[in-house]
Image 1 (tube, one colour):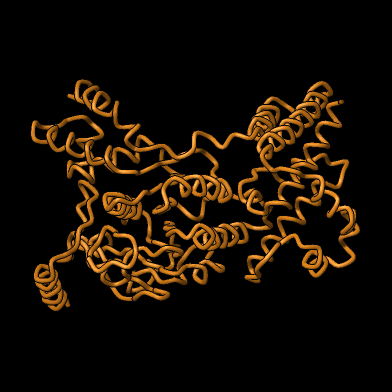
Image 2 (cartoon, helix red, strand yellow):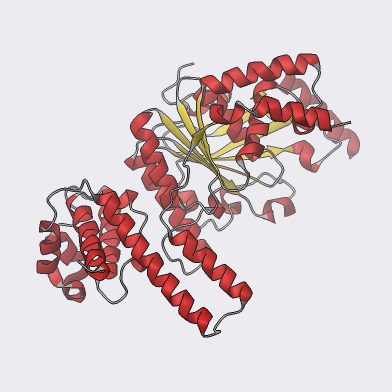
Length: 452
C-alpha cells in the first residue's frame, strides 16, 4: 500500500470513528488543514465539528451526525462533501474505534510531511530568508501531535525544591453544596464552586488575581478534591514558588532568594507535606488552546471525578479554530469553557483581565462592562467576581490589607461582597474578621472626613 493510500485510509478511519462515537471529536487535535488538501475529507471534518457544536447549542438529544440533522443544517450543500450516501458509507466502514489515536497520528504525520516537502521546495528556490525559514520550521514542528506532558502533580515538582531553595540560600549574601473554596465568606454566599459552573475572577494587574486563585485551589484540593491549574503566563517553578509561599506563610522574597530562618525552614517543610498530599496539578505547556485544556480536563476527570479546573488566564487561551478577530477568539474560548463545565460536570474557574476604564472612574471597582473583549463572556459566566484593593490606588487609606471580592453575577447562587485580608508578602487571602473590618471602615470614614 502506498503512503498516499495509507493516509487516505487513515483519514476515512478518523472520520468514521468520530461519526460512530461523537465524543472522540472532543479529544481530536486535528484541524481541517490536517487532511489532504486535494480531497474533501478536511471539509467533512469541518462539517462534523460544526454539526456537533450546533447540536450542543440547540441542546438536542441523540446523534449529532444523524443524516436528517445534517441535512437540516446543510441541505443541498452536503453534496459538496459527497452527500448523505457518502457520509453513511464512511460511518459504516468502521467496525471498531479502538485504533482512533493511531489513525490520528498517521494523518498528523502526513500533514507534517507535506509541509516539510513544501518548505524544502521554498528553501531550495530561495523564496524565504533565514528569519522566515526559522519561523516556518517552528510552525511545522508544532504540527506534530504532542499533547505535551499534560498536567503534572505539584508534588512531583517539590521533591527537588528543597535543594533549589538551599542553593538559592547559598548563592544569596461548612454548609457547602459545592466544592470548598479559599473563603468561608464566599462559601456562605455561593455555596462553594458548583459542578457545571463557570466562574470568572477579574481585576486590574497586580491586585492579586493569581494569588487568589492559588489560595482557592489549595483550599479546594485540601478538602479531598482534585484541582488542575493551567498556567499560560507563568512557568511551573514560578507558580510553585507562589504556592509554597501561600501554604507556608513565608515571605515570597525569601522563597525567591533562599534566605530562610530556622523557623521558616520548619514551615517550608510543613508546606511541602501539605502539597504532596494534595491532588493539585499544573500544566504550563506553551500555546495552550481551549481544545487542549478540554482534552486534559477530560482525562483527569476519568481518574478524579471531583475535579476543579483553573485557567490563568482567559484572554490568552488559544483555539484550534480560525477566528476573524481577537474578540471572536476570546468569545469562542469562553463559550467552550461554558460547554466544558456542562459536558464534564465540573467547576471551571478562569481569570479574566479587566480594561483601564475602571481606573478612570471615581469608584475604581471593576464591573462586568470592564472585562476585556467582553463580547459574550459576561453572558457565559455563571459567577463573575472582581477583586479590588483600596490600598492599591490610595496609599493613605485606612483599609490597608483589605481586599474585596465583589460578586457582580451569581447565577443560581448569590451576589454580594466578600471581604478578605490580603498579605502581600506571602500572597495569602484569608477571611476578614467582622470586628476588624468594622473598625477599619470606621477609621477610613473618619479619615475621609478629615481630608475634606
